[in-house]
Amino acid sequence: MKFKDFESVISSARMSCYLQAAGHSKKAMTLYRLNLRLSQEFFTVISCLEVALRNAIDSHYSTIHGLDWLRDSAQGNGFFNQHNCGKTPSIINMAMTRLNPYSHQKLIAEMDFGFWRYTFGRHQFHAGGQTLLAIFPNKPASTPQIQYNNTYIFTELEKINMLRNRLAHHEPICFTNGQAVKDTTYARQHYAQILELFRWMNINEQALLYGLDHIEDVADSIDNL
Image 1 (cartoon, rainbow, N blue to C red):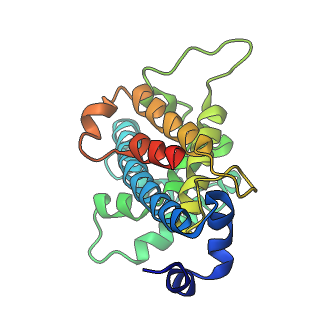
Image 2 (cartoon, one colour):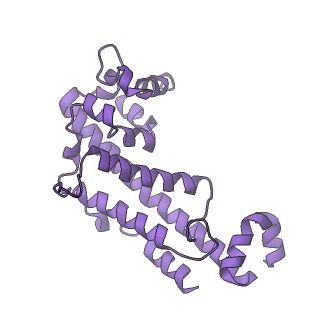
């Protein structure tokens, strides 16, 4: 496809940063396609992290609060059903209305990445019994410089959630932030962060992502373009 035809589909406004970063039209189209491939690769890896995270949380809280802990947490005297937990109980109850018939596993699947991130939020973490860090058995011990507590985990998950939102809105991840300069630092930092969380959960990330993860290869292709 000629660049003018490609640009008419994608839009000149969207292609302008790729053109500026790549230097000429053919490379701009290649860079755009590589960015799409990198985004696809991240969606796969983040999806695996989300499933692993929610399953670990579910297993932990099922042991402590019972097999229907998520539904029960938003009802009556449920541990999330308190003012400090904000919208958490209403999110659970709204999800319940979409399920017919109900099952615990269906309810778990209704919760998005943001919900699981907020289980490490200050009030939700305390409401759940302050035990949820147990799902990260390989997490480093805290030091005076860095506290690897629930707030640290919440912040790390927030960064990944923000990346996920960028991908969902088709924002590029192959540039220096705010500039039309080709750079995979942002992508590589978040990739390393995701792999670290897998390791903290005692998950062999290489075995889990075998055949699925080509992030570094695509990032290398972008750097070498």
